[in-house]
Image 1 (cartoon, rainbow over the protein chains, first blue to last red):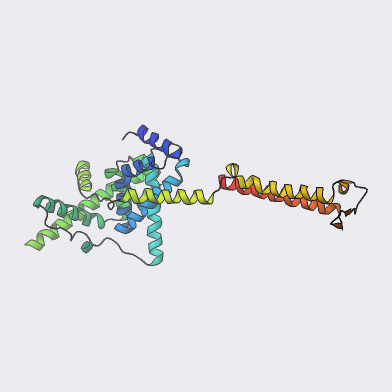
Image 2 (cartoon, each protein chain N blue to C red; image 1 turned 135 degrees about the vertical axis):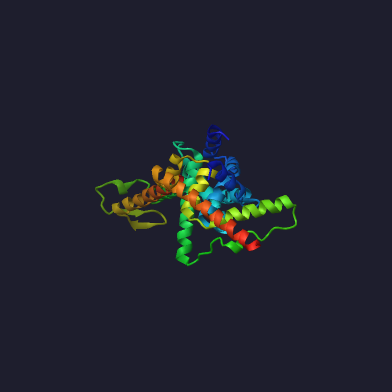
Length: 190
Length: 120
């Protein structure tokens, strides 16, 4: 959806139409949830953070002036919420992270293609789980949420040039992790 | 690794929130709005914000007419006027009147302040 159309919806929300905000949720729920999930690496917490991010965005909607893209503003809220959640979990001594054995394991008797898709998804998630939340954030924002370097700087507060370097490192690390996992997989079936 | 390949890889691993996420979220927002409406009685549209000070002012005026219909209390020559009616008799001090007015205006100011705080 074009930014202008989104701004029209935001205008409606500002005028008190709560249900117009449902369109915003439907538009961004996947991206917001994924960003939180990649940082926190826990499904329940990510869902809680995603929900909280939408509620916060709704509460602060009047402060959104449209100087940046709405998605950038929303992702910044999600990013900060996710970091807060990680800190809160650390304070509680709760460090349930996405572990290898927690990924997958729920492949039922669907078709072969679905099984392959699920395995592939599982495989990528294992590799992503092995790289840092920071690198995951950058990869998610750049490749999945299609943010440019300037927007990532706005969201994370990391300088554009640093983002570029870290993104390059994250790509390399993901590649190494995928190769390592593939090697282990091949060795296990030999 | 090429950018397009990574993009494809990440797209393949996209996770979505659980079913009914948007409904749950919008319900939470609705509940928030409902509680906000319950808590923030809008002063400028509320009868209570106007009625209470008016009732107090009415009571004060009524008490003047009943006890001091000549408004002798306002006569500075009588510092301690004696109010005598058929059913009440007591000394009224000028400061008593000032204090009564201060209470009413203070109460009014407080309601006004609450109103502006809630509607902000």
